[in-house]
Length: 415
Image (tube, rainbow, N blue to C red; front, side, top):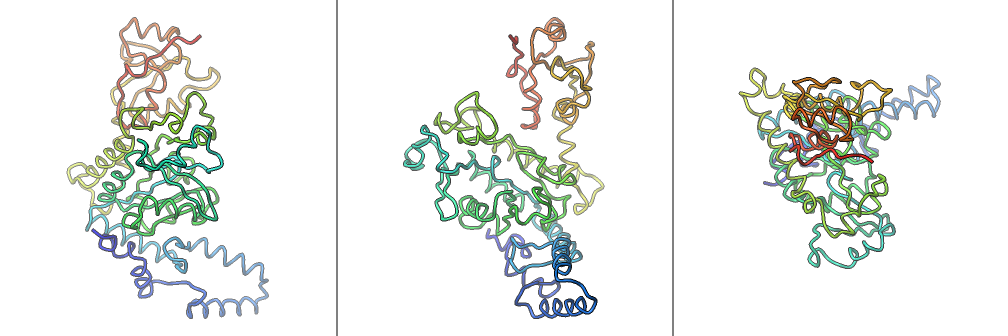
């Protein structure tokens, strides 16, 4: 299936421009209509005594409020009514005609890991001279252009993930990196432009400084999922759309950036995420996406809701609540004593996963989460035959979207 056949409005940029010329608005320095309107506005403002600085500020405000979808076409400008119309039509087309939702993908630490060539450690130098066929590490790429010199490593399973996800979702890239970097990564991930179809959003396209937002996407928020390594970079109203990924650190510089120094990076060990954990993480995420897609489009699961009115964020919350459903958790020496337990992120995370949390032990408790096996509550758990696990048990359940085997997260004695 070619890109143009999936969604005729958005996948083909020329079609989009033609579409907007019929019912929308196309702004360009070379557009007669746009030039006439701007000239007329400036004449009125001059007569009213509006300064050049004030006019410029007003134009910037107008550009921001109306938004410019420059990543789709450099001359494309839309007013609010046209944005709403296109969002509704595109979403309805995807849902009804193709049974597709929209999936927004972060780049760094989510799909791949990059490092500047000059920042590579001596133990990583072998990657510069060996090709993908010379060693077991796959999808290592060197980008050497006048504007950047770096090496990129794709997360394991990336090719299969993108191809299969694209059958269920319309895919977009959204990175806080600059546009040149975003386009280079898109070319590596999708050489034939068959998956992203020009939907590559970078930092300069955001309407808020240092924040991502779905307001630059021609899709309704209720039909959009996001894969990112953090929620914090997204505007508050879009954080419920985010599935948080564990960060992918392949290079030493990436580990150093996040103060990870307890072990060598994958690059120096000549191994990778799938080798260390026994399975590619993206394979697990793909399984989750299939599950979400099935529930969203299942008439029985979402009985009484028309397809166009369904909200994928509600599906996320339903699935999240099932992860630790039936678990009653007591925490021991995990939080600072001067902070209320029920305000702690780990407590809130456990509740979001469907667990019941308590500060006191009783027969209904199923798990004690502790940092030290010698605490009073830890000893009670062992004596009472309850599960005693370390805090990573909850974090991993959150990332994997499924309850984890307790024996893999033992609580040890702390010296």
